[in-house]
Image 1 (cartoon, rainbow, N blue to C red):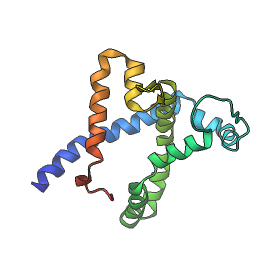
Image 2 (image 1 turned 90 degrees about the vertical axis):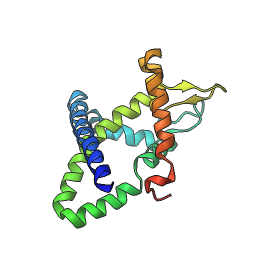
Image 3 (image 1 turned 90 degrees about the horizontal axis):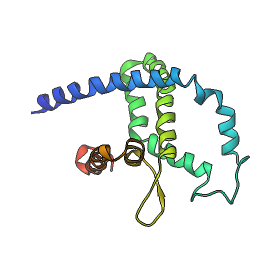
Length: 165
């Protein structure tokens, strides 16, 4: 049974891995390295240079960054780096840096889409995330995909997937 699950996981993970890498490279070159060109501007925003207490929203730029980082960096990132270095040596660290540079472009675009296509819940509070991007950007025909994402996210956080929680 374990071998079957391993074969299924490998069959699913390999195409997804190439899709992530090729998608990241596409965004990296399509944006003409925008996430690196405006790095100093991003630091100025985080330092509060453009803060206005009358701006709409419930959190400031620093709180938004902290939330985004908290959802990006997890236990797998910490333990995965240690395991990769112990198994693959210093070369693994180099390729993790390369993957991170390309992966930042994917993360930049997903975060931008989440801000561009926010929605409102039943109480009128602004909400965001992939399900709102699917619903607001792609329209009604793609609504089942948004529901599927929500269901997969609920199942994915259950404790029987060997998570640290």
